[in-house]
Every structure is written in C-alpha cells, then in structure tokens.
Length: 140
Image (cartoon, rainbow, N blue to C red; front, side, top):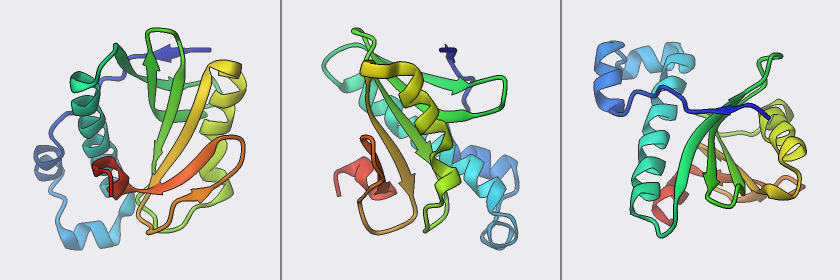
C-alpha cells in the first residue's frame, strides 16, 4: 500500500480567500468548496492528533488508478482509519471507493473508515465504514 504525507494547506479561511471563494461562488462550483472543506477537516484532525495520547500520523492514499482517501490516520502500531470528506448532503456508492480500497489493502490493520459529509445522520455503510456528519469532528 502506498501511503504518503500530503502537502496540505492548513488555513481553510486563507485558502478560501486566495481562491476568492464567496458564498455565491460556492453555489456555482461545489468542487472548489470541497477542496477548502478538505483543508478544514485536515486541520481539525491535525489538532486532534497533536493533542491525543499516542503517536498518530496523518497521511494520504492515492494509487495509480487515482483511487484516493483524503486522510489516512495511522498509529504507531500501523493501524489505520481512513477519512473521506464530501461537501454533499447525500452519500453515493462511488464516494466509498477509496475507503473500500484502503480497507482491502490494510487488512486487519484497517480499523474504520469514515465518510464525513454535510448530512445529519450517522449511517453504517458496511465493512466498518460509516458516514458521519461533519459536526462529529467536535463530538456532536
């Protein structure tokens, strides 16, 4: 499995400003908003990892077929949690492609996959993969 550190912009507000991402622009192009949202989630996970007990790395997964997982959290024992970020309020089967691939590659070291989305419900999606509202980053 290829896991690598991801060069990530840390300040989502600054990134949104540099991209001139206004509320109107967000309505027209969700893709640009999605990149800013990924940055925001990465920075929140980085805060959690830096204050948590234990040693955690935030990595990124992408294979030659461009299947990717936005954030792979790995502990010192090599156990991984995959995190995918979607700005949509719905979950599609294709949104799970990267998490499922990571689960297959990591085998027993795969502990969980989480698709953070703009919905309200936590949903089991099979094989220890869950959809969860973005607000779960703050325990809500």
